Length: 203
Image 1 (cartoon, one colour):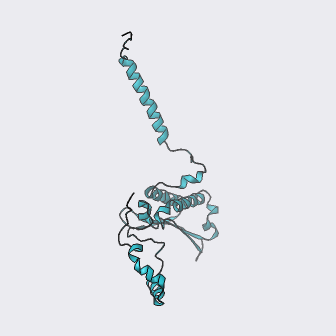
Image 2 (cartoon, rainbow, N blue to C red; image 1 turned 30 degrees about the horizontal axis):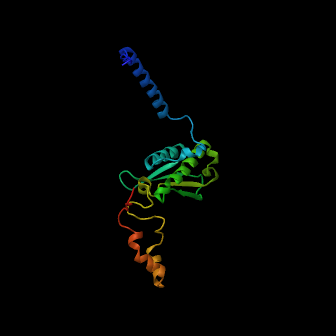
Image 3 (cartoon, rainbow, N blue to C red; image 1 turned 90 degrees about the horizontal axis):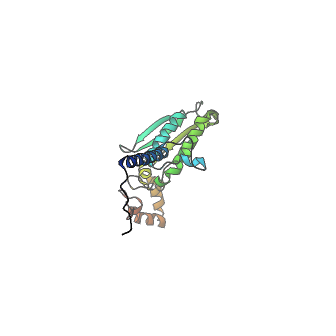
């Protein structure tokens, strides 16, 4: 009692309001999705970091092409590759600089960013590239693409590539002296060299 019931909003006013809100939402969305003209981060080097393996690989391939590199691919699976960019030098037997990223997959974001930054620098200023001083450059992107893609140290066979560095004869030589370390390694080999991908209890 004593209160007036507000009348319903006229359809024309309601329609205009909805259209105005929709237009405003579209403008915000378009501005958000539109690629920035320059890196929005500070420092700008942050823009060389990729969120995942697939975009990192695509950016590496594009940057390698812009830098005049020859690109080689080693297929690990149908969707995973190790990509190698080679920037030749004008010399018969040039010294070679090799840079590898992603031996441990979870650490590949940093290594990939370094490679992208170098490729962009050399594409923008070819005179600063090592190849201009007679040095061949080999950039190996994602040595462990499975680990990069899945966010883990190990490869698709559960092997830590940075911990399996001894050849079979070196393991044998290490075991001949009855080394306690070798015996301890053999005892826990099932843990170090698992034959299938390890899955954490909690993701």
